[in-house]
Length: 424
Image (cartoon, rainbow, N blue to C red):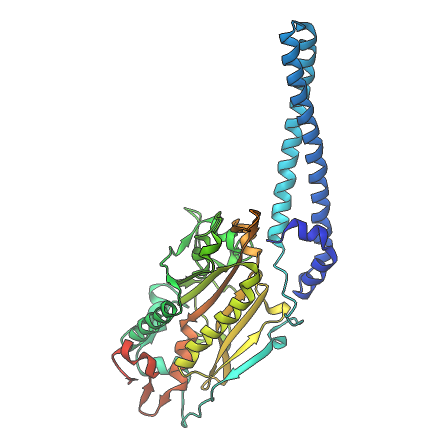
C-alpha cells in the first residue's frame, strides 16, 4: 500500500509512476484521494480542538466545584455536554473518511522502480540474459501432453473425473518426479541459508490484504465462504504474513524463509493452446523463497535471489532466459520483477517458471512490518519473494527437452532423489 505522505509530497511523481504501470485514471484517483486526505485533516483538527476545549472546561469545572462556585460549574457542564456530542459526530465522520481513504489506497498498485522499462504487454519486456543451448530433438518428438499419455505418468482425465479441468493426477514416475523436484528445491534452499517453513494453505482476509492479493486478486482465489478463508495462490502469502504487525530486530535481518505448498488459482478466463497440459493449472506445487530486508539492501538481495533461482535451472540443465518486466506486465504489488523462462523445444516457446520481485515498502505498509533505526525511529522494511521453483512448466520442459526415441532422460542432479535415470 502506498503511503499518504508520498502521495502528498510527490504527487506528480506518483501519477507518472502509476501511468508507467498503465493504471487508468491515475491523476483523477490520486487527486480524489488527496481531497479525502484534506477533509480528514480538517475534521481531525476540528475534533482535536473541541476535545482540547472539553478537557480544559472539565478542569475548570473541577476548580469551580472545589471553590464552591457550583452555579458556574453547572453552567459549564451544559457546554461540555454539547462539546461531547459534537466531538462524537466528528469522530464518526473521521472514521468514515479514513475508511474511504483506506479503500482508495488499497486500489492503487505499487510504484515501479526507475529501472522498469516502459511498455504495456509482455512484448515490451526486456531480455536481461539468456543461458544454455536449446536442444535439437529427434524426428517425431512430442509435446509433454502427449508424452505423459505415452508413459502414463500424469492423468488429466482422472483429475477431471475427481475434481475438474486443471487438477491432474500424478502417478508412477510422474509422482516420483514431483516429489524429487520438491525435495531438491528445498534442499538447495537450505544450503543457501533459507529456513524451511511449512505454512497453512488457507489464509484469512487479513493475510490476503496484508500481501496485496485482496482486493486486487479476489476473483482469482478460491474462497471457502462458510469460514471466509482463501486457498493460497502462493506460499508467499502465508510466509510473509508470519511477520505481520512485527518490529523486527535489525540483527535478525535479512530474514530468509523457504516453503513448499500446493498453490491454487482459479485462472478465470484462461483458455487456448498456450494453457494446454501443464502450462496452466488450477492446482500446482511450488517452492517459494521469501526475504525481508533493510531498504538499502533490498535490490542487492533481489539480484542474489535471481542468481540463486538461475542456479537451480542450470543444475536442471534447462536453457533459460531472464526478463525484466515492463510497467504494464508487472504484478500489482511489485516495484521490480524478474521473470525466468525455460525453453520448451517441443512447443517451440519460452515458458515462465519463476517470478522474483521486490515489493519495497508496499506490502510492509499493509502488514505494519517494521524495524527501528539507531535513533529509535520506526521504519518500514522491504519484502521480496521468488518462485524457486514452480513445478508444472519445469516438468513440461524436462519431459520435452530430454525425450529420446527410447525414453526421457532425467537431469543428473535428480538421480539421487528419483531412484531412476530415465522415464520409460
